[in-house]
Structure formats: structure tokens, C-alpha cells
Amino acid sequence: MQQHQPNWRRLILVFIVVASVVTLALYKILGIVEWRGVWVGFTKIGVVATTVFGLWEVFRRWLWRWKWFRNWLVDIPDLNGRWLGTASSSYVDTVTGEQEKPIKVHLEIIQTFTNISIAFNALTLTSHSNSVTANFIIDPETGRCRLIYTYLNEPSVLVSDLDMHYGTAILDIHGSPPDRLTGKYLTGRKEQTKGTLEFTRQSN
Image (cartoon, rainbow, N blue to C red; front, side, top):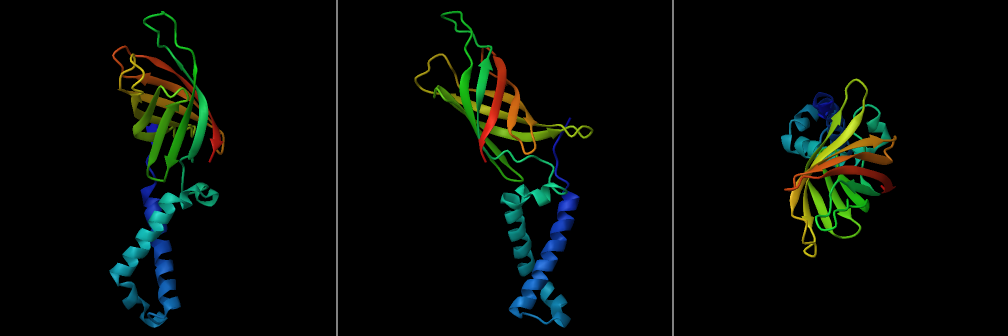
């Protein structure tokens, strides 16, 4: 497994070509320059930079999710949306001595090509957590992709036996397009706990 890194060389080449074509087309449509003088117009850095930046923002936010791009330019899965599931924990109640029962939870994932934000909430409203950092790890031989993220958990003020803490979750991604996430988590609590997670996609 290795941490995901976009193929920046291919991306830069594609954007140079696309930005050049779009810039030249704009010059011609707007009548800024004739084709014979297009090189002079193309050297106007401001127009070129604006075109490149605009194309990059559109791609980064939306276009990367298109199937056409995903076939040859994008190798990370699109996990945007709401996921419902179950969390099982090794936590044992210090008063009753009973292990905590599985609880219903949900994830809200907001993702662009360059960023991913994960919000985790228990449906019992006892706590919620937000990702601090996240990335994909990909096995270059099998193509297996996993999501790994570190989160900060903040319990409800009504819960006295749960402290604010950090934790890490690793989720296997199933389906194409992804429709299920399964994995494990490990907390950084004083009494360290671990558990399993399983989610199914509810919306995109």
C-alpha cells in the first residue's frame, strides 16, 4: 500500500493543452486578435492565467467526478454523500462491566479532487467527530483502495464518561461506484478502545 498521489505530470500536460485551446478560442470568438497575430495575444499572461485557474477550479470541484475523466485521469473513488452504518466498540462500561452494544452511526463526506472532509455522528447524539487529515492508500499491484483518516471526537456535554480524543479509522472501499465501506478504528482515549465500522451509501 502507498499513499495516493495524483499523476501531476499528466494533469499539468492536459491543462496546458486544454487551456491553450480555450484561450485561443476565446481570442477568436471575442475578436481580440486575428489568427495571424494570435501569438501576441497569447503572451498576455493575465488572460492565460485566469483561464488556467478557472479550468482547474471547475475540474477540482466538479469535473473530476465525471466518468470520462475517471477512466484515464482520476484514480481515486468518489465518496461524496451520506453513509449510514453501524459501529461496534471494545469499550466496557466501568459501572456495569458490560461491553458497549453496536450503535447506529452515519458519515457525511464532502470531497473534491484535492480535499476530503469526513463528519462522523452517532445517531444517539452522544458524540460527533470531524476529520483532521485524510487520504487514500492504494495498492499499486491490485488496485485496492482504502480511506484512512484521523479524527477529533467531541462528546456531548451530557455524556460524563467520554472525553474528547483523537482516533484513526481505516476503511476498505467496496463497489464501483462505491456503495459500501468497512473497516476498523482505534481511539486515543486514556483507556484505549478499538472497534469495527460498516457503512452503506444512502445519497450521493
